[in-house]
Length: 132
Image 1: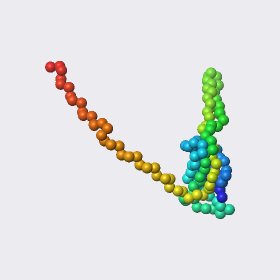
Image 2: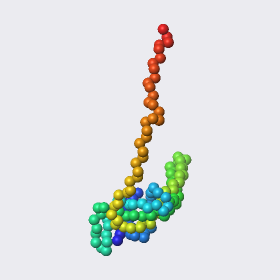
Image 3: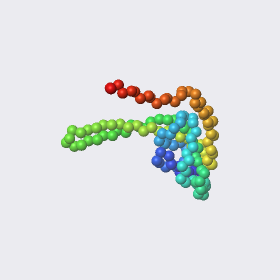
């Protein structure tokens, strides 16, 4: 089974066990992420509906790509600018394709903050006119 997923503005064809390099995703190495934006899914030549499908992946590494040199020049104006750029990347290993979306476990709500910390400030008293 394979699927076409969209992440970082690009589309990737993925199957279980594939390794792909995508733009940076939040998380650390070893974390599991879910790619919910499934555009197409197929199983043995049979097209499957994509509603409720998700692709689960494990983050292998967080890194940076090769340096790209940006060089600007305007002839006869003594204008030269050299700049470099390295894109942040994430390497993913696809664990499963076509899992149903599962609700993430809800985190316990924070306890409400007591109002006894500091009383509200009173408005400043107007000063009497000193020039009389």
